Length: 220
Image (cartoon, rainbow, N blue to C red; front, side, top):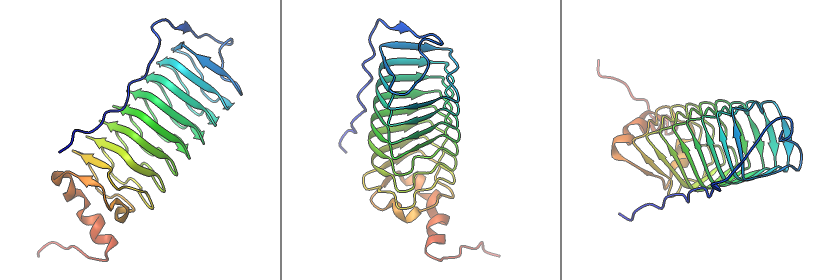
């Protein structure tokens, strides 16, 4: 089997400017380059067409923040609170999100290229109508996450809990699942063309049966 391509790592400069408030608060058309956001509260902000390049976020709160047409290039987010964020028509390139919380976040109509989500809690997160190119979800909790109408042909899921996740109308040809929990997923017929480990496939039995109108009953 051909070795799978790994996402390109972020190119974050060695020397970063330490961000502070209110000087470096989020704002419309803001340009943030080579900056270190550490232990800041940037929650409940609204920013349109903001650009982040070569930045590192550590222990920073962005909960409830809304962004439209944002661009993230060469960005690292570590141990950040991204819960209930609303991000639309935005892009992330060479970005790593690690040990962060994305519960209830909605990243709709976004483009992800060379992105890693590592050890993140992303239950009830939404990625509707988004595209994924060379993207890895690794050791993530994605309970009831919504990938409806997403293009996941360049995505890989490793050791993720996808119980109850929604995949209706998603493009899945070539998407890979390894050591994942796939129980109770919706839109199971959209997984056509996906590559799934044999040990994971058992979790799809009841979902597939339900989609085909088959009733599974235990022997009496």
